[in-house]
Image 1 (cartoon, helix red, strand yellow):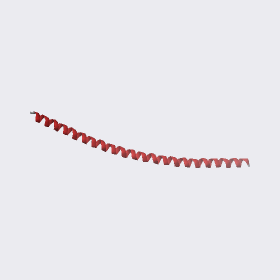
Image 2 (cartoon, one colour):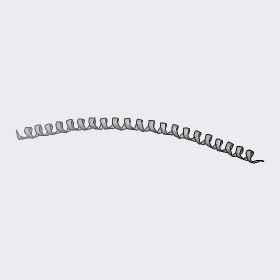
Image 3 (cartoon, rainbow, N blue to C red):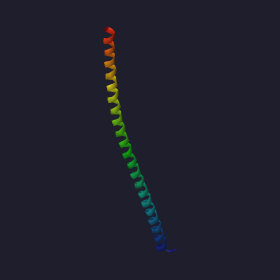
Image 4 (cartoon, rainbow, N blue to C red):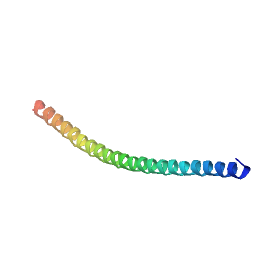
Length: 80
């Protein structure tokens, strides 16, 4: 095998390695897109939970106010 054949063989190996690296890069990019989509869904879920939490707190405030009103009414009735 002469020097030219050795050089050509090395070039083929380098090209194969480069092709493999490009394929791996595409796979990593695809995985990153999936991860970003997952993060986006999680962010929407968190926002939805925050809205639910605010709604629950508003309802609890209404209930607490009603309890206070009822306690005041009971106190007034007992005083009569």
